[in-house]
Every structure is written in C-alpha cells, then in structure tokens.
Image (cartoon, rainbow, N blue to C red; front, side, top):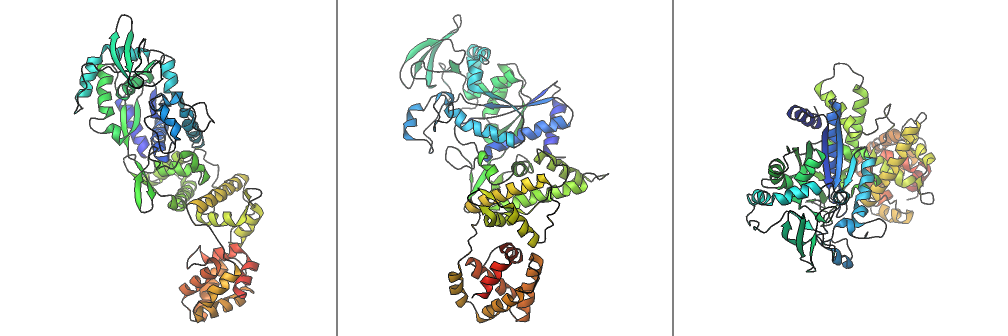
Length: 529
C-alpha cells in the first residue's frame, strides 16, 4: 500500500467522522517553493487516500495572509522597511501587479496547484478574521488567558508574564500588529492596548479583524473552526514542545476539540553545488513552484514528492531532472503494461497506485515518449526563435533518423512531446548544458592537435558515412566498426568526434547525436578537416 492509503486507513479507524477534513496552509511572505509544496501534496495524497477508501472528505488550504511582515527580506526593496509589522494582506504588492503583498506570492502558487491537479477549498486568514470567523475563539482565548499562559509556560525557558494576553491588536494608528494589551474589559468585550511601534494607545473590540490570535493559539482555534481531522506539518512544528504540542493542549482544554492527527514531513533541500541547503523563502534559497512547469510536467513534481514517505528528506537537484523524468517514464510504461492484469503482485499494485497518485489526468493509452535528455538536444536544435516554438516537422525528421516510428502519433502525444521539448530546452539552457556546435575553423584547429590515429579515423569514417543509412543505430555500429578496422580504441574515436563537434571530450550519445545533426552537416564536418 502507498503511504497515503495507510495513513487514510489509520485515520478512519481512529476517528469516526461523517466528513474528514484534511488541512494544509502556508504564510505567503515570499516565493512559495517546492519545499512548501510538499505539505500541500502530502495533504492531497491523504485526501485522495480517504476518497479511495470510500469516505467523504475535503481538502482545505488556509493561507496565513494576516501574519505580519517580520523583516525586510532580500528580495524586497529598501522602502518596504516601513511595512515591517503590518499584516501582509494590508501591504501593497511589491511589483504593483496584485491586490496585496500576500496575493502577489499566493496567487501564482494557487495557480500552480491547479496545474498539479489539486482540488481544494482556499481560505485566507485576513478574510476569516474580518468576517468574524474567529470572534468567538478570540473571546474564549481572552477569558482563558491564564490557562493558555500556563500551557505555553510548560514549554518555555522564559515564562510569559502574568500581564500577557493571547492576542495581538492591529494598531488603529499605524496598522501594525506589534501591540501590548494592557487590559481586557469582559463586560464591554474591549481591550486596551499600546502599540510598540508608534506608541499609540487605544481601546477596541478585538473582533472583525481588529485583532489576531498569536500562532500557537490561532492554530488550535483554526482546528475547531474548520473541524480539521488531519494535517501535515513541518518537523519544526512537530518537535517536542513545538506548536503542535501546545496546540493539542489548547485545543482540548480551551476549545474542547479533539486535535487533528499529525503527519510530519521532512524538509526538501536544494542542491547548490556540492551542498544540500534547506529551502527558505526568507534566505532566497528557493525553487518556486510556479517555475516548475517551465522545466517539466506537473506529474513529475507529484512523483518526486509522493514516491517517498513524508518523513524522508529529499535532495532536490535541478541537474538531475532528466533522471527523475526517466524514472517517471518507466513507471508510466509499467502502469500501462500491468493495469489490465489479474492477480497483481503487491509490487505491481503499488506501482499502479503510485502512478495514479502522481498523474492528475491519466491518458487512455500510453503516450508516445521521447527521453527528456534527448528532448533537451532536439529542443535546442529545432527551436525557432521567431515563433518561440519548436519546429515539429524538423523534430519528426530527427526522430525518424533516430529509428522512432512517428507515423501514428496521436494528438495528445504530439502536444505532450512539444511541451517536453520546450521544457527540456529551458532546463538545458539554465541548469543543464547549452548545446553549442563549434564552427568549422575552430574544429580545424582542434583537429590538428588530435592524435594521428584519430585524424586517420575521422577521414576514414567520413568516407564510410557517404554510403550508409543515416540512422542512429547504423551510425553507432559504424563508429565501432571503423575504429576496430583501424586499430583505434573506440573511446578515442568518440572523443575525437566530440572534440570536432562540441570542442570537448564528451557529449550526447554519439550515434543519436549525429543522426540528429543530419547527414549533410555531419559529412561536411568530418570531410572538411
């Protein structure tokens, strides 16, 4: 069984509910990255696991848009210093393209979730507070401030003082959330506060968005508002004494609610050179989810994040995207080979389930697939800068020379292939290797420095090229055959070829590469030296 189905089964056995609410959330204070997506995709997999078990369920996403801007992040202009402490829903968009700072980072992520095949109900914290959704929970928190303080102090090295209140008022003067509550009048339901930014003192009813609960109180309040059954969370929240532990006690003892089941997930680390660094919006170590579909289809990201248990850390290496896509392609191939079989083995069942969870829209039949790394080469060679698209006629010519049967490719496969060609090209230009064919003059200079045996082979190979079928398999065999006939180590024949084509000793699979470049060009290059 896939881990998401196991979690769903345990949840159903532990909590008997008419409807299971799976929650996920994030603070859109910066670019929402692949590491953040792990939480949402984990929640989505559990939701799909519950549906798979035949129970009613809903996936909700709560954006913490009423959190304050905590500091001037590296990606912000200097003038945004004045907004530190203000709820991010009330701050202008950094680029002037969205309604607010929060929407600027949230909207692209929500659009990405749609691409990823995630259907959820979205709630924004600022709207929830302003609608009065939290009013009753705020009142309960204020009336139970001693109990909440005692719970939090159990896990603090520096205890909260007796004059602490579980609420942050939005200052009426400067709009910031850093305020000190001085008193609470239970009869009038009003709080007296002093702003720690501007010094303003005022008296307000802390409802309809005039105040916000601090995180460790907000979270359990939210569980009871939305009847949350289960929620994935980062290991920081789940650590001993973390916000989940305090939330459990506040949920039970203050809000009279059974806390949700926790699912802890590990960080995703971004490979930067030889180091793996935890992704962080505030530190600028990110790969934004919105950028994923520039380099690969959404199902590849789902596969990356769902193939491992949430507790297993993932090193996200952009240079290894081709290997990841190859793994997904193999899974897809296995799915279509075994899906109609009877008496499936456990391993086969797991493969089918993994493909189902990875692929939002499962095609009726196995699509025509070209390996991603090969697509990165074809995409670069056939891209039309004027049309900003690949030339599919040239693509099909190259594929035929590489022994692919292209006559009966369906429209779905053609579209998917075109997308992959462009995505793989984007990847190669930014994270892989840009394909640069050196000019003839440079090739001649390199040729002069080759070993005599390599020069002899190049001339011999050029003559043989004129009389053979120009396809990848034939060319591959011809390289070995001609090298053997001249007593040259095939490795040196390959190196010589790469040197006169790319100016370096390595490159793509040579037979396929030569077929891709075309007969006229290849014969001219090998013969002109």
